[in-house]
Length: 76
Image (cartoon, rainbow, N blue to C red; front, side):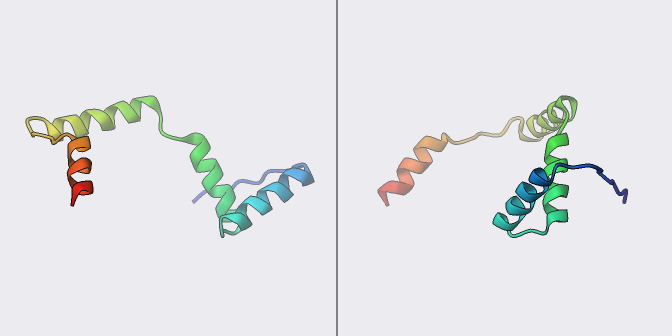
């Protein structure tokens, strides 16, 4: 796995990241890794390909109206 070194970060930024990590119950390293992974996100092409795979897999199936299912459950 690759490693990245970021130099000359503003100390205020580092403190805010540490506070964020503490709030989430993670180490600073784990928090930074998550922030970077989320920043990259999923490309539009990857998202479209995944949606197409899901649509193909679910094609031809009958899907219930979710609002009706929720209402039925609440009546119990």
